Length: 384
Image 1 (tube, rainbow, N blue to C red):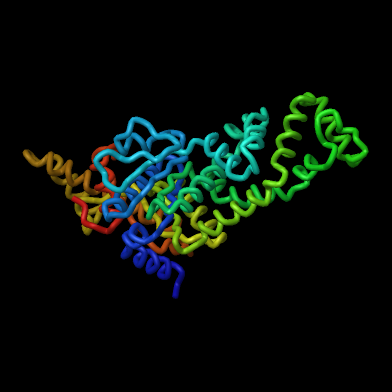
Image 2 (cartoon, helix red, strand yellow; image 1 turned 180 degrees about the vertical axis):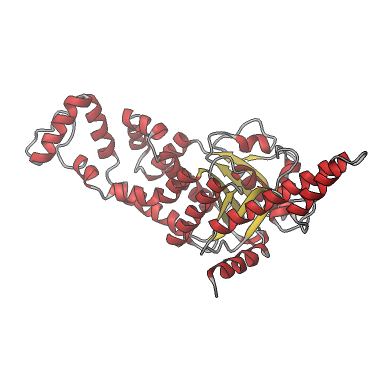
């Protein structure tokens, strides 16, 4: 079969499906996409649809823009699940990175005193709120914590834009690699502590590095750093086991990734990249959502014929308005054809399994009613 025909058939088959099965059955649904494609709206709509089916649902955002709270009619979100007013079975929350990190330390530390020693360390306080990649790993921790509690039937995760969402996907492996790396082992070497970097227990290379680093950053900083890593000694296996468990959860059939995009070429390129990465890592893809698509009023007409008819009527007395409307219909049809070509190119040799297109609305989605409208489209129901 020619590649173009095969792609067309794959696209047509994906359009015949919707997200109803995923929303009704999956335990974890992760929404991802580039910035400005309606990912947060999609996540909230999915959560609302799941709750409407009687599933106890939580939608969690790690997007610092806080748009999720606004769309659900909440003044703010924090690290504690909060019920959405007027909506049964639906809670929402926003990741508090530092509080979640504190909870991780409290969970793995052998005593409350040891946990306090770690959380009072200056390096820990800086790292727990600003170190690159920490947010994504803490999101994984919070996800697994919520999963383990068994309180919710459906967990919907709203991630940052796609390239950062790859950090979300990579977080467990990066942590495991770090815990097995030479840099960490150096700090765990006996004798690497404040005032003892020249100890005979320290290798020559390690001692030279520590002395040079202390001159650059200050001995206090290096002491805090060494103290932090050494205070975690004995907890690393717990971190690694947890990271591996999170990764297995995301790879399991009870999870599903929903890639969100718009018909613009740059957004579709990001969507293709992420779909490929999900397939590469063996992550289950639930489907692709294309937001803000153009739906022409006269889909079966020819754009050229509409434009010609509009031009012919434009100068006729009393028919100028009709001609203008035909011209607008021709323009919409032309845009719809361009979007279709861009989508077909982006999905070349890819099968998104499910393809749901959500048409452009006259106004933005900013409340529960608008979210329900999107949700009906995701479920494959007629939208008026």
